[in-house]
Length: 242
Image (cartoon, rainbow, N blue to C red; front, side, top):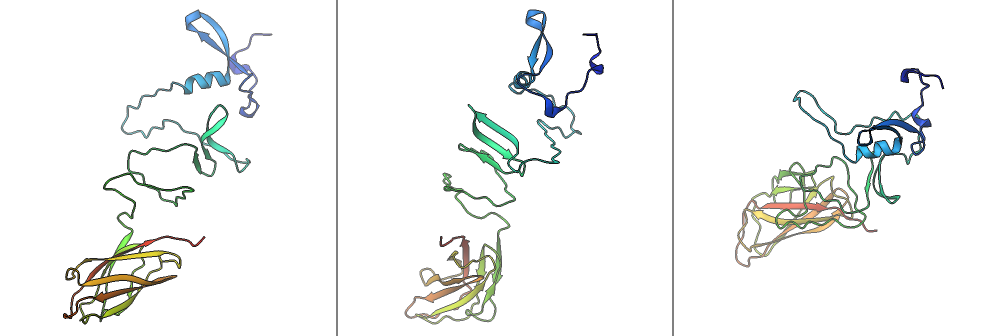
């Protein structure tokens, strides 16, 4: 074969590379010899021990970057596929869906901007954290006119300050909370936060429908009428019937 510069060789398109068979020349320093290596072996050796130096605060570096030009591909194509013995352990589809076969441990705060669906269960082992809503999910509303006046608050959770109209002894009053976050099968929980005489009231949700619920407050005292601006906390728990 005539001697040619590397730049004079015919190009091999990425799609035509047979990673297990096609070879490149490589200098084996330990043996002082030029040898051949397959593309898959070379890339595998590099991925196994990658290193980089980031040393410019004005540059936004990338540890690993893959930019795919997708002119035609199957819907199941993957941006990343991690396997052990040919079995999927983790992968990311071209649509950005991530699937992890094992447990995922997150030690820091994680923010999800989209919906998350669990096919098993979600549990918290924190003794103080728990499962709930974060800042921005809630809101506040104040009841006008009377304790039976309806309140509108389109939030998944929040605080309602009731009107301080008199609630007679051993008497219950109800009002409607209009809330677009409530679906017909949801569970709405409510409790007294503040502004109430201790052990004087019973509060609960007596009805739930799409877009609203009915909250009832009962004055339990046998000999005292109460005129208090009770502050209630509520939270909507999403639920289904099937």
